[in-house]
Length: 272
Ligand SMILES: [Zn+2]
Ligand SMILES: [Zn+2]
Image (cartoon, rainbow, N blue to C red; front, side, top):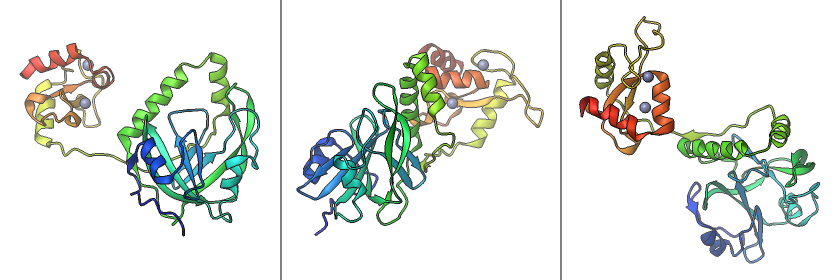
C-alpha cells in the first residue's frame, strides 16, 4: 500500500504537522520515514546554501551534503536516486516564508540526476548532485502568490547584501545565466477609471508629494504622473477621490518602498 498523506497541493503546513502525518522528523532538506516509506523533501528558498531552482514544472533539487563534493550513494541521495525502483514515495514541500511549508505534492524524478558546481558552507567550489523532479501525475505546480515571491526575493536580496565583496563576486560569477521561471498568481484590483482620471487632472501635471512638474510627457503629450492610493488597496483602502493622489514615478516608488508616515500625512492633508 502506497502511503497517501491526503494533503491538498498548495496548502501550508507546520513542521510539526508534517512530522505527525509522515511519521518523520524534519531536519534540513531530505527526511526519510520508515513508518510511511516516504522521503519528505523540503526546498527552503530562504536559505541560500543550496541553489534549488524552479523551472516551470520541474524543480531542480540539490542533494544532501553541505561540505565538499556530494556523493550520489550517500544516505538520502541514494534513496532519491533510486526512488523509481525502491518504492519510496517522495513528497516535496517548499518554504518561502519562515516556518510555513507549502505542499508541492508527490513528486518523481523527471530525468537523471546530474552534477553541477555550487559553493559549500565554507565558500569553496564543489560538485553537488541535482535531481530534476516533477509531480508524479505530471500536472502543473500550484502557482504561489506573487506577493510572497516578491517578499522572498527581498529576503534573498538582504542575504546577498551581507556577503563580503569576494564572496559576492564568486557567487555572482557562478550564477547560471538562464533564469528559472514559475507561475504565480496576482490579485488584480478593479480601479475606477473616473477616479483615476480625475486624480490626474486635479494634480494638473504637478507631483503632489515633491510638488515638481511631471518628469516627462507621455506619447499623447500629457504630463506623466501615476495614480497612488494613500491607504493601499491591498490594505483595504478606498478607491475614492479622498484616498487618491497623482505622483511622479520617483515619489510613487518612494511611497511603496519607505511607506513613510510623514509623507502619508502630507498626502492625506490634501483632501482629508
Ligand atoms: Zn514627486
Ligand atoms: Zn501606489
